[in-house]
Image 1: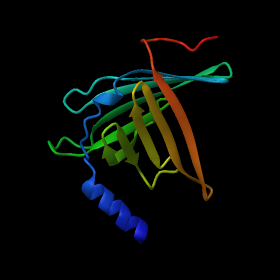
Image 2: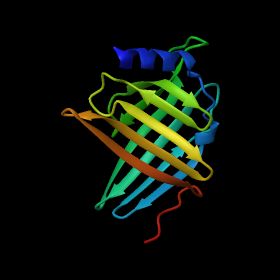
Image 3: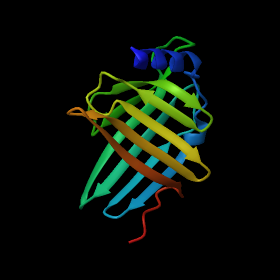
Image 4: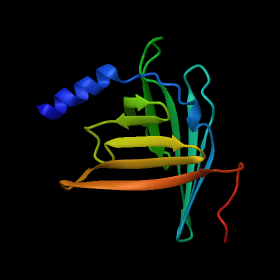
Length: 154
């Protein structure tokens, strides 16, 4: 019950149509054994499109995404539409926002239930989190702003 009240209060105070221009650009994460690039367009009439490419152990994977209103209503809140590997879109509405930070959430989804982006200068921190088999799981990425199509050093 307390969690529901906290979530309701957060939804009432969050800007559900935040300016996410701070996410636009080409972002690169270089970690041992994993290279991830993420590209976001600048917002245009409430629409941003994104593409993620992950290279790990000689394989490449992708996700197509968009951030857009959940309906055609002029005041509809924004959501993150995730399409990993071309699957049908899963819609994660904005549940929290602040300058240079946004949280998308869908408690009924298997995993993740939350997607978080936060920018600090030329760093973009992203994470997905949620429960799997009753245990909290988190996957994190630390991206750096980079030139389009840059790659990690060999």
